[in-house]
Structure formats: C-alpha cells, structure tokens
Image (tube, rainbow, N blue to C red; front, side, top):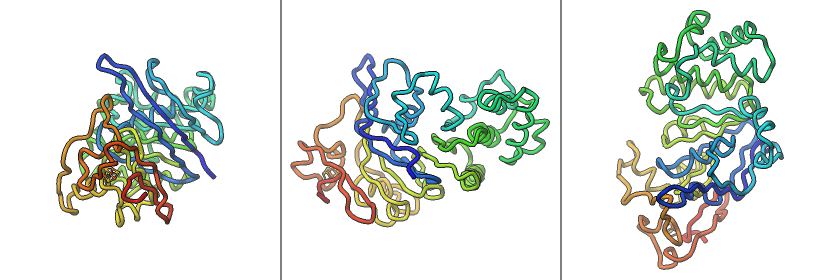
Length: 313
Ligand code: SF4
C-alpha cells in the first residue's frame, strides 16, 4: 500500500534576485515499510521537497500539485488538521540537532512533548515515555540524561535524541533530512544502524534526504536522484549502484571514493536561472542538439527503472 504519493509537485518562492524554482514537477511514491532515498547535490531542492510535505515552508512559498498521505491531500488540509499530522503521523528528523533542538529546554522536555501533545499524557507519564525512548536509542543513564540540555549532549547523542523525538509517536512516515551530516564516521555508522533497526522494528516508511550515497546504500530500498528541481532517475538501490543510466547519476557515482573519485565537470545551475531543455545539458558529456531545447520526460526502461534522458527515449 502507498503511504505517500506526490504528483506534479512544484514549489516556488520569490527572493530579491528572482523566483526560486526549488521543486519543479516531482512525482514520487513511498510504500508501506519502504525507505526511499532522495539524493542529489546540495541546493538541488531536496530539503525544500521534504519541508513541503509537512508544510513547513514560509508563507511566500507557492506550492502546486498533490501530496497524498494515505489518500489525503495534505495541501488541502487546514493548519489545525496539519498540526495533528505533524509528529504523530509524519515526523521529521532534521540535519543539525544542535540548531534544531531548543537550547533552553531539557532533552527530556523535548522528547516528551509529542506524548503530551498527541497522546494527551500528563507531564510525568510523558517524561517516563521519553526515558524509554532515550533508552531505545541507546543513550546511557536516560533517567539522568533527560534533565540535561542539548549542549550537554555529544553530537552523536543529540542526533540519537532527535531520532527518539521523531519516533516518539510511532509515525507511519519519517522524513529524515541528512540525519548523519556532521557526525564522525564511527558515530555515523552507529546512527545509520540504529535507524535501520528502529524503522524495521516499527515498520515505519521513510524518505531519506541525503547527498551521502554510502548512507543511502545502507538504508534505502529505492533511490530517486534529484537534479535541480526534478527527479532524473529512479530505481531500486542495487540497480542504481550497479546500472546507473542517467549521465548525472553516473557522474555522481564516479565522484565517490572507491569508484574513481573523478570530480564531475561544471556546477549545478542556480534554481533561479535554470537552463532550457535538459537541466543537465551544460555539464553532460553526451548532450545532443535537442537536449538544449527540449525537456526530456521520465521514461520506464524496465525493471521499475526510470530515467529522464533522451538517450533512452
Ligand atoms: Fe545529457 Fe541530453 Fe540525457 Fe540531458 S537528455 S542527460 S543532456 S544526453
């Protein structure tokens, strides 16, 4: 069963420099207990896409299309109805726990808040639940740690506390935005392992937003590759790594340590000033004349593998 279905999503906002087309016609589906990785370079619109699902964008943002959560269009709900969904049905794990957690509230208060808000538990009972959650994410001496403030936690502990907050109400869907960025490699591996274990245990679906292909390979069932504002390739994780088809995906993978460490030519275009035709044509070693004028559509090339490139159309 599909938990989240996004159709024709566009997210634009105005700035002094012009209109930022952060998401430009995205279709995505996430099934029950599926982890979908949304990968791409920094600034390609993936965080904006994640925030738009929970309607956490500023008021000057124009959002068009459909974001169907279990068949219900989130873009049509009232703010009151959205408040009941956030944290309870769909939770978000942000990329930097130090800036995302409230520095003047104890970790216990913050982890227990969803239990008070969504389950109506009294403070004391909610705090007991918070202690259980911290224990689940392997924070030692949780009954003591709940009294501490975020700055008293190490980076890895803070990120685990964020995961505890995200999982507190056993949501159906988690949006995890670069959950391991800024952590050292050992802690990163522990956090990835923990997320894998917890989402499997609670059968939670997840949209994992990351530029780290190693993390995506560990956690994801399927991968959607984003290049400024749109999905350019989609397939299951093994297929993406073994048989990448889009020249951008190939270049992105070739730049990884262990796969050639070959930097990709050129820079990602500005979301304010996107090129005509295929957005990747100024950097593409295989660009054809038509790539400069026409916009390629997403085509199915078999085995549930889709690519947006004229080489396959
Ligand atoms: Fe390259 Fe053309 Fe394919 Fe775009 S459509 S990725 S420019 S070959």
